[in-house]
Length: 297
Image 1 (cartoon, rainbow, N blue to C red):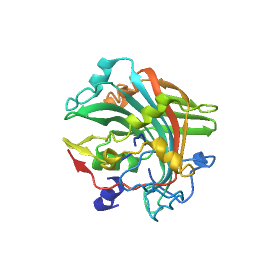
Image 2: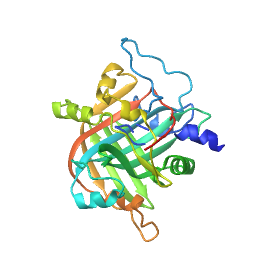
Image 3: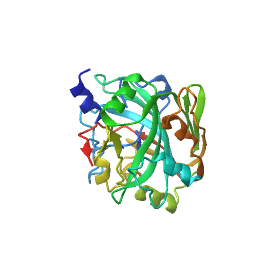
Image 4: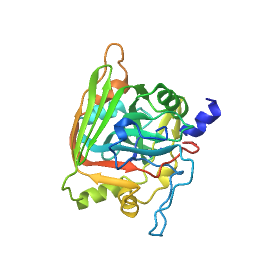
């Protein structure tokens, strides 16, 4: 695949809130066949909700056509470990916050790369006085997804074994690195009524960009996120069949995956422990999106 095509393919979003952190075949993978839902994280190329009550049909050709995942936001137990994980170029935010997710990009443009799954840890940071998400680790299940994300977008991707199980109203995601289960997240949504505090979190998390480090430069791989003013919750209420959102209560287990063979931050970042989960949800996206042009900061 040419370098030019990779640029347009890979130049967030996960949702998602996000998310982080997507590629394709015309049919869902077996893991997704029981999914009446799919998705997260959109860029400036994502379909926009209009004022009409009718749901627009996506223009032919989004690279990421359908995807879904579990997203958890939590306050960290150890602020010192949080600071250690953030690169020096970033400042600590007023309120440290971690985003963890497991996603399945199960339906893609057939001319794009193959479907894959992804997990990630993002930390909230400050850069030049503004809040931003910075990805600390992003395991994926295919080498083409790993290589493209690292080389063109600066995502710290490594190869992992990832699963997403959907047995509504329960959803479970796992991430394994070299035989170590570094993340397990279970979400139950049955009977959950969205609270005012959760609604406020959706609004507070809207419009925060992602910033990566690519060959020594700070870049924004998804500049559309910073321009967003409508929360994911609001979008889902406008287009409930194409943007499914189920808020619930989550259980999250994290463990460092660092070994003598893999001692890097991409592995030990999973050792950061939650103090309080403030928001957790399952999100499925059938609008799809394509990456656009990255921006340097």
